[in-house]
Length: 411
Image (cartoon, rainbow, N blue to C red):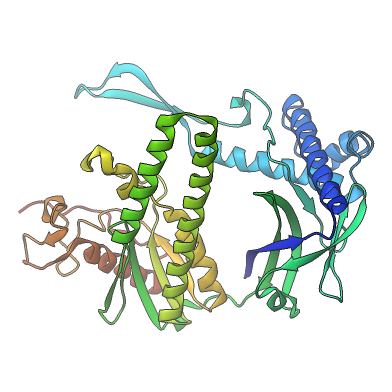
């Protein structure tokens, strides 16, 4: 099994000429990507690397001044972007109301599959960037600096990255480095891949069910019956402050307010990312290696915002749950553990003691679940974590797609 991570490294430039060389390279690379994008859009979304090289390679070299490997990278970058968009379109078909009714008086909806032909314009690359190939366009020097290739020739930069040397022990394979300029500062995002042993589920020492939410960012339940709550109330209050500040700036509408508004959004995103990093690291460190973390698959799961007061929907409903799952997955892999996603159906409605599934047993206002059959009662987030942990146990036992499929009738 291969695990890929992104090393985010700040770089320091010696002189303004190096900065100009990098800025020019990023802009030329951006324009080259748009050239490739227009060609693909006008030629039936051709994605063959060989055919695109034949049609565009010399143009990218002569008109945009890209080096040989940069031209190849630009083509690969655009092809990857179109493939991503193609996947996203196929996963979200277009739904439309036919205007007809069924026998119960409900609207009849149809869906149509979407592909790249649904695009009205070529994909536009707005943000300057530059992809550098390992050992071709960038390399690590003996003095600890990095050598980067630009359209004006090579430059040498100093990396400022805590823990960068751990990726130079020979077990990691370094790949493409993406040059970015964020807030006037220069960064390298370097792809690093490591070969890891496949997880053997029969050797699992812990099976942990994780219920994600906002009141508690995570509620965990393990095979020993131990429950942990990770409080999210302070996070809700801080998001409320961000929202209030954003509303004040939006009401002003000035240029300075809009610039400030953009910075606020970026600051909030960085803060959310840091929280997810801390939480995922805590979970992996607490349970140790050979742990199976079980998460709900939240794809296409709709959060019921109508049950939340409109003024509080933003801070109480939305969170980067997908990012948290991604962080937990790669950290678990690096520590000899695994993450599996299971169906979210009925995990909050099922009694973990008697198996009773009844929606009305959950009291959202009091955050309490009380089974009307056996009388078992507990915190509703804990109930979800217990059911998710049971599905993880079923996965260990050989069920590849464990889920609660049927609803018990009310007796």
